[in-house]
Length: 77
Image (cartoon, rainbow, N blue to C red; front, side):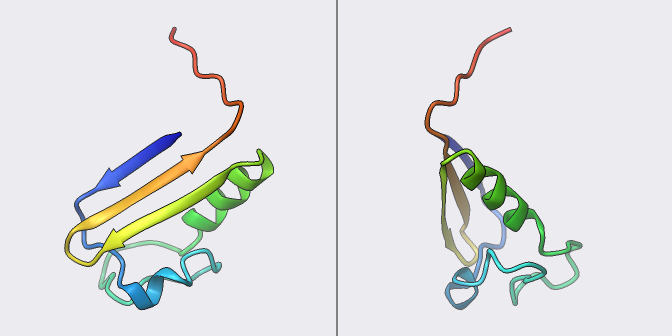
């Protein structure tokens, strides 16, 4: 399990169901740069490794993304 958490602008509930559509960007991003491809690419990579991705977010509170990659071996250098 890999978890990434921020305390940013969060994602409006209505936008959350579209997060994995190519080129979709949240309605609250304003002038923040982006293409709307990042989560699509990550989801495809995770699915190719038989994993899953979940997102929990609240506007003005931040977002937590969890990647579950079964069989992933993490080693220390």
